[in-house]
Structures are given as C-alpha cells and as structure tokens.
Length: 377
Image (cartoon, rainbow, N blue to C red; front, side):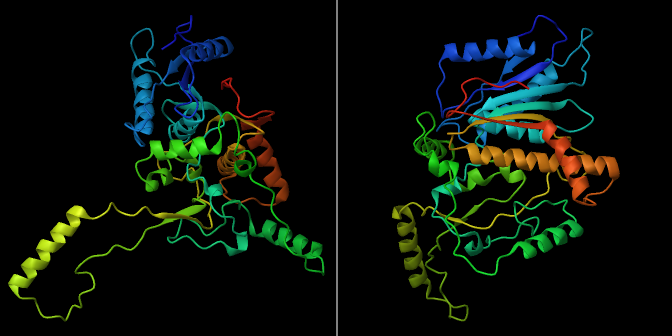
C-alpha cells in the first residue's frame, strides 16, 4: 500500500503485468511513483500469483481476495466506520486481463465498486484462435453446444427490426450484378505482429501453457473476460475414450466369474501403464453474442474505461474488440436506464447513445509495440 498524503484520497488498484514481460523492481517503483503523481491516489499493488505452481484460477482468486481486503481495511473513515467508494484499477498484459475481469464483475450498484479502469494491451482472450488455420466466415462450423443467443458475435443485441431491414435494403441496392471472387482478408494483428520484439506470439502461447493446467481452463470467462460478451471463436474436441467394456452389447449373458476376474485384472494393469489422456484438439467455430451485464436483482454499472494498445502489438485486435463490446454494452445500459427499452427506435437514436458510450470508453492506439507506461483512470 502506497498511501497518499491526504487520508481522503481515492484508491487505485495496480495489477503488475505478470510473467509475460518481466519488470525490474526499479521499473515497478517508477510505475507506482507515476501513478501516485498523476492521480494523487493511494495506490495498492495486488501481488497476485501466476506461475506453473500457481496456475489459473489462482490469479483471479488472488485479485478478488485483494479487492475484498482493500474494501474491508482501507474504506474506513476517521471514526473507524466503513463507507462506500468508487475505486480505480489499472494493469497491462496479464494484469490488464485481471483488471478487466475485476472491473466487469465488481461494479455492483449500492456498494463499493470499481468506477474506472485503465488497461494497456490486456490479454482478454487466451484462446488465441488466430493460431489456427484460416476458415472463411461462411464455412465456419457451429459450436458443439448452443450459447446464450443466436446472434453473431459482432451483431448488436439492441438492434431493432426496422434498423436491420433498412441496412438489408441498402445492402441489396448496393449489390453489383457481377459476382466477384472473395478478397483475401488482411492479416490479423496476431499474424502481422507475431515477431513483436517485446511480446512475440510464441511468448504468449508459451505462457498460456505454463499458466493453465488444461486447455478447458482458458475458456473460462474470468480468465478470458472477452467471453463475457461473446462465445469463443474456437472450441475443443475431445478424442473418444476406449473402454474395455464400453462395446459390450447389453444382451450379452454375464461372463463366468473367473473370466470376469481375469478381465478385471488385465484392465487394472492396463490402466496403470496406459499413456496420459490425449489432449483435446482446438478448432475454429462461429462465435455468438452474449448479453452482459445480465439483468437481475444486483444490477451492474460498468465503469469508465481508458484502453490503450500499440499498433504493432499482436493483441491490438482483441483490445479494440474489447472496446467495441464495452461501448455497445454501455450504450445499451444507458438506453435501458433512460427509456426502459432494450431496443433502438431508429438509427439516429442508436448513434446518440453510441456517442455517449464512446465518451465512457476511450481507446488510444499508439505507434510501437507495447506501452511501458501504465495509464491511470
């Protein structure tokens, strides 16, 4: 805890970048000093654990426990009474991912909550689907299991039927009579910047293998917070498991007890020496929109955001996607609170609320690969 001179100063949580990019103690001291000077806040660094010995979900648990500790021990007035406050949180890379998770989940109305978040190059999607073979959008397979909605991930949940019909009509009018072969899509930031000298893609993939015990874990929404807003762009296919009795027909007569014991003996032996279970295969699939924040008795109010990324960062695309998802969700929240409706009346109203949301979610793409300076809320 790095206390500000004023006891009533706001509190800013700082989450270090984690194992992807190592920072020296001097770098950390410089970051803390910069945060204090620019925000005049009491800075609390949450030293979460993230390593091969402390794999996910340990980093998430540590950050949530640290947040609870701050609310319990630092949000106390001069008479030792607890009070409600809005806190800030900032981080980059793994710390940016955890800061995003915290800001999305600890923003409940009626209690102390995260009111502002600043993240730089956050790792918000550990699935890294751009590592997989490219498939044209129309050829993408459906996910094995259904999701919350049947709307594509890039479609607005608040879009009205009138707006959709107007867009469809405009697209129909603009269609050209001659059918052209589809253009090759431009490379993604992951593909174009895979040899980034600070955070190359092989380092990110290597750290994913270190920080997650099994592939299923990086599909978790707390680990990959972009999945609060959409389903993953990839899925895991598990290999079929062989079982000595699985293929037996149900109408076969019971075996002789001695034969059954012999089979059980060999089955036990095979289980002891069999190879470790096969790793599931990761493949691309369609992604669908998710409604976040959900409705309920404990409404969430998303904080104000400052999001930065480098134009040469392999994480640039997912960082911008996070910003778009946040802007869309906040616009929908404001519409609901102002009008009680969950759908736009027309395109003009849609633009009006989107402009408000853009003021609450600022995005800055700077030249270079990765910002070394933490942004503050």
